[in-house]
Every structure is written in structure tokens, then in C-alpha cells.
Length: 95
Image 1 (tube, one colour):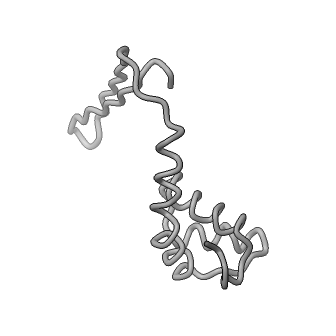
Image 2 (spheres, helix red, strand yellow):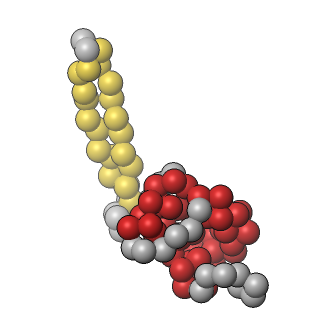
């Protein structure tokens, strides 16, 4: 699966995981790798995400536990420039 790639498979997995899990932009992931001394372009990260992302997603879904019957709802009301905004977050009892 990782043949003919310049970087090791563990690095590719880490980069794709960072991009998808933490909702970072491609350039932010590129910057994080550069801080760690790894020079990889955002275009390479995009290609890896397109190529390996669906495979990782399928593998992670098999480990994911189903949602429970109990849910908790958090609600926050914010006032920004004289307008009110409501934010909600729903969590099952396992989170």
C-alpha cells in the first residue's frame, strides 16, 4: 500500500490522521510537520488524504462503538454586538 512513497508509512498515517481528526488545513499540517523537521508540501498531504483517507475511515468505523440511548445536551447563549446566538452540543453518555 505504501510502496514507492518517499516517506515512511508511519509518517503518512500520522499526517492523514492529523488532517482528518483535528480539522486542520493542509497548510497547518504542513507547518506542524515543518516544526518537527519534516519537509512535506501541502499538496502531498492532500494526495495522501485522498488516497489513504477512505481506507483509514473504513478501519476506524469498525472500531467505533455504537451510540447509546442516553444523550446530554449542552446549550450556551452568546450575545455578540447586540445579537443573541445559541450554541448546542449533543453528547452520548460515553463521551
